[in-house]
Image (cartoon, rainbow, N blue to C red; front, side):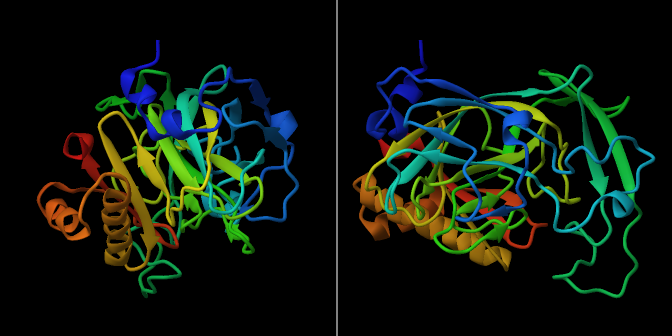
Length: 330
């Protein structure tokens, strides 16, 4: 039996396909064939689904499997911006501009007989080094690759530390209306947000701007701290199961997220404070539109009980989620 929060979620109460028996689709590597490094309205759809359908997706890791051993050098094997390969686009039948696509992440499992993830220090990438956007004269940090054994319970970081397996999807998007945006950059279409809450047991809401929505998904992380400070999480190949639905005529401007305990608005920008402003502004507007709050009361209440989640501050744009407990929305 489904948990009560899911039954009461926006997706299940407003979704076009919420009450229908889902058809299950398998988006395998063979069916995907060519993974995408840009998110936009110009690539050929790989799958058509009805609202309420379930899709089992075989994602590749952020390095598309090119990093295999700790002796590998990212500078020799990786080429910017050809990172972060995406599955899709998936067409959701009936999705039109002004609608919202809901993505419930049901399960994420490591792929392969002996699954491993990788965390890398990549030259000129990360929060504490010079980058193309933060120009410094210092030399790049050393290239280091860590190969990490993972299973569905733990991430075996080192002999000293075993971390809990807390997977999430780093990049989840719908297509912009006319732009094609590289898969490393988050914005109001979603993209490479790297919000750790976007894992099993969460629903992400994305604003449709292109016919069919054109859903992209990839960049699975076995675990990640707030900010993804060194530039990479534990990047791994996953089998990710999602249920996709459609909410008609729900006008939102930025991605939103719901789980059992809270709702969250997500903003991406530079500088970091502007991403935070976007996230909180959208949360204020959401509370006023859907939960009966006066706008200024919502604004003042969030100053007392709002919480912030730092998705990333390493990508071309930084991502912040602003959230409030559902307790205050009753």
